[in-house]
Image (cartoon, rainbow, N blue to C red; front, side):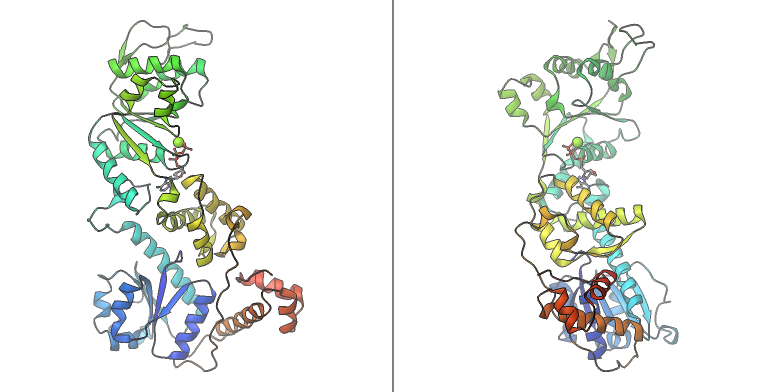
Length: 464
Ligand SMILES: Nc1ncnc2c1ncn2[C@@H]1O[C@H](COP(=O)(O)OP(=O)(O)OP(=O)(O)O)[C@@H](O)[C@H]1O
Ligand SMILES: [Mg+2]
């Protein structure tokens, strides 16, 4: 698993193929070759290939219709060839899933295209209908997920949005309850009116009533003018009662009355006010238990839970983790103008097996933190805070194949030298089990020079 997805290299020139493969593997990408050219489409399907890097002439010879099919099959294509001389090639401007790289090969340019291809593929993945032809993310735009429980949730949200019934959203902290509430509102025919959130836990008790129902001028010290409450602000829209489990019993009675009669009295007024609000309530507490312990009114509980939904914790839908990581990474990279390429395979494995007690919010915060601290390259396990590594063993990157011949299409000397240098450094580190002093000695470098190089190159290495 890798946050950029798997890359298939199709090139009959073994040396050039090995070089590209070594270079990208070294950068942290998940790279495979097609052993049998005739099976290229099977490989793409079976190995869940996301990006195909191919030498154009060779690709044409083994799969003449490939270019025409490129739109239908899902991987992005990075083609290497003599673009300006090839009239059959689409104009070498880059489209969403097609990237062209002229010969001679420049590995830096190749990598930047691979990054763009990975980016477009991730967007496409978010854009793709699932097996039943639904477009969940389009319906619940900000909610990301492709796991079975999330697809079920998306379906429910769509249905719920059609009605005006009261919804109770339960789920652990950070699972996306507010996001779900907003999605319901956005999909409903109330979307052009207000979505009004009230955090029942954050407003002081003595202000909550006026906050919800408003007050009339002079009703209490400081009430200098009439003021609309949240119920009134949400008229014809949606009122989101968040942290409902933390509401004082006295207010529970008043909320119940407002829900039952669809009317309420502002503080200091005896004139009831009518409103048309759709109520969505949320809590991370176990309301049934609060009812049992008499901390929450049973009648209010039944009134609220006409449609109960529960958002599963992240640990029960781990297949959403890479998708969420990618989406947060894209957002934070763009917010901070950083160019973090992705998460290395090892890092992603660690994060996919972590327990996530703080759920999606914790994951979002982690991605923000690593993007702040790192502005380019891949995130490696070294970049993670200690707690995510507990119980993990060191993972090492496999050694690279050597390149000693000039590929048929020529080569960019600088990138090749760089890849060669990286290869030797990596071998030295592997041989010394990550001991930088010994590795530096093997390479006849000062230890500090080696450390500097590792930092500059953003290389993955293992500590002793
Ligand atoms: N499925 C999702 N896709 C994308 N972002 C998500 C998803 N679920 C949650 N988030 C993000 O995680 C953060 C927490 O979500 P939200 O505030 O909706 O959680 P919550 O359940 O209300 O948490 P709490 O119980 O702590 O109030 C938000 O920044 C939200 O955008
Ligand atoms: Mg919340």
